[in-house]
Image 1 (cartoon, helix red, strand yellow):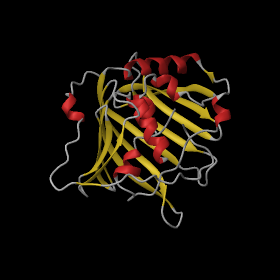
Image 2: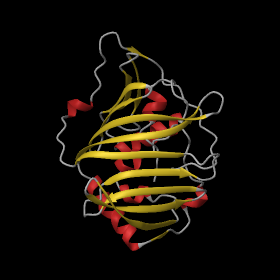
Image 3: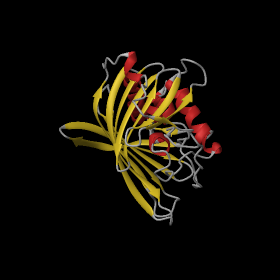
Image 4: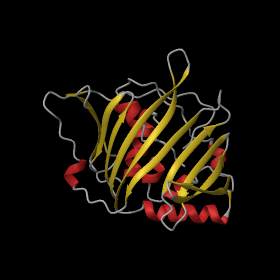
Length: 267
């Protein structure tokens, strides 16, 4: 999965207040390996992709992510994000976490990151006006070296994006979470990345949990996301995605963030 996490907000909207997260793009050679995905796992992802291609949707996600402090000590940071999407080119992310509150706006013309705590914001123009969300997030990642591990869910083909670089996939079992049955899926992405995904055991196949484990990194750190409050029939207005600078807000230049030296990167 092109796990270029929406923690772009952590790396950018916090204006450098949080250390860069672990990088997770795979080696390019791994992307060309012929995947061995079980029929049941493949079908679950297809249903998930169909649901996530809804024209307008919203959801909430709680995440736990590893980052390194100035001494190289692995620590954890917690965030809660509320995501609203209006395809093809509108995105709003409201983030609350250990490092404060931040917002991301994409209105088809520019991606704007705003820190209410600091009353500062910065903007990145769309590669082309009206560029799809996927293209805008790809631009942000390539320009500033940040990862957005949940961006696959916002792509034009979520199931295909999730499988980028994956060589093996299967269903582990079925579990019940809050009275609802979910398929527990497991995928392998060389070199040394394991993906666990829990999707609703229904035609909607909405994701409930995602865990990414980096087996080749010291201490095998992981990224954890738990989804809730899915609404596949949201009705946001175009105005919801337009950033209006509050009084006294300061615009700052968006500086590139150094890429982390991880063994492999999830794309």
